[in-house]
Image 1 (spheres, rainbow, N blue to C red):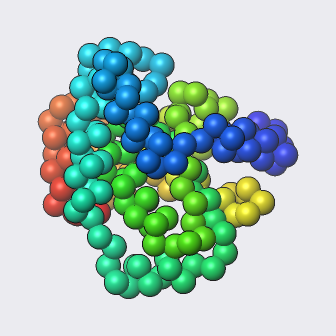
Image 2: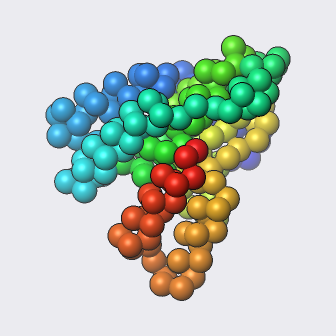
Length: 190
């Protein structure tokens, strides 16, 4: 992408096709009931990851609470911000991060959470790659004119370092790392 105008157009197009947090969860549940996941790749693994993700999302929705200090901080946020999150249902990191992002958005009347599917928004994803990859979730914080304030993702710093160290040592991500990463998320509690 060459210009800020092009990026703003890409962002506006993504926002037009975005889902609310509840809308995303409903879409995922409906697709699972049809034996599908979000994303352009459909197979048994993606379906199983999606089933696991929606269970984790629902668990975090019930169990995660912002601290009083965090709640006060976000409640006092006075400027309108949109959290635009690139997501897919099969993403393990998303299952832990999106409920926390939603809790932050719910804490402030000025933060609006919008979710878009990565595979359906490749032009947007290309603008916000992580080390050249389409890693998700990717939160893009926007002001009221759709200027990018900051980005976050695909995972917290400690988890990112854990993944990088494992990749450096083993050359790839394995089921062992994924299991250890899930244990880390559960221990960290958001």
